Length: 352
Image (tube, rainbow, N blue to C red; front, top):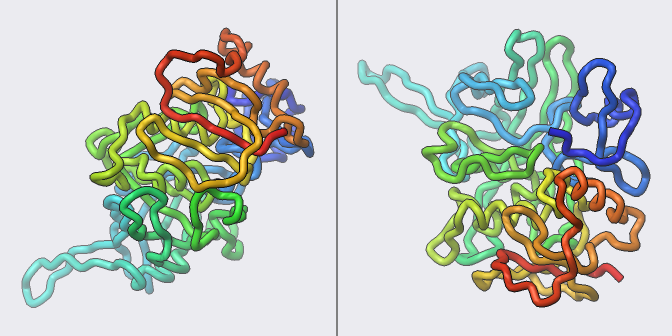
């Protein structure tokens, strides 16, 4: 589907690294106030990248390609190959070896993963990347109870086929911790997690249990909506006794954070925009000053809309919201007056 709303010439769209259109077609893109195309998860998002390619998931066994056509083909450290495995939020490498005539399972985990490299290729093997783990830590705390720590990983990539390049960050646009709705300890690290899958074109949750998600895992760079879902315990891997969520509630949080107002898959927001939210189940973000009520949110987008978080800024999305709703054949959500329909989240912002 088209996730974008402002028509751009083909050459400009490709230069801005949006999805390639068919030959002879124009591509559309959500753009920021400077006229630049935005990543799928919102303008200035800290999305994960390999080369020019934005991605968010890989499959452990190397059997299946992700939406970008990339396969995970193993984990290598010091010339030794391990099979990568993500369980919950913990990455390990493992292999079977003969020790004293016994078949023994060896593992690589925690700090021992540092300098190990995930091998990622396309189907033909004509393109190969290495994702190096340059740090593994447990400094990041969850934003919802219990306030315990989660594993995070600093990742850098380089291309080795067809040409070799230097290592650069997978998460290339670190967030400002002061603008987030919870503490971020390591702005260049990622949370890896299993049990949920997402379509980042439609901004929907496509799997919400390990049985559905099978051997896929997500890479949620600090500050992205995927990391926020994990830190707010709105994933299977990070749920707790105090915070258990349905698939619909997880998708509602996804729509809320990305400001997918009309449920079209358009992330009509800019990362780092101060936002305060409350859930119908009693959860809340950190306390920040707010000047206006924004919206009530469900799994289908905004149920009603007062003052959008970007109103009056250089990234004002009024026209984009109108266009997105028109494409969805639905009106722009009405003001939040006497709304009796059930909602999952309500938001306030600093918009004037």
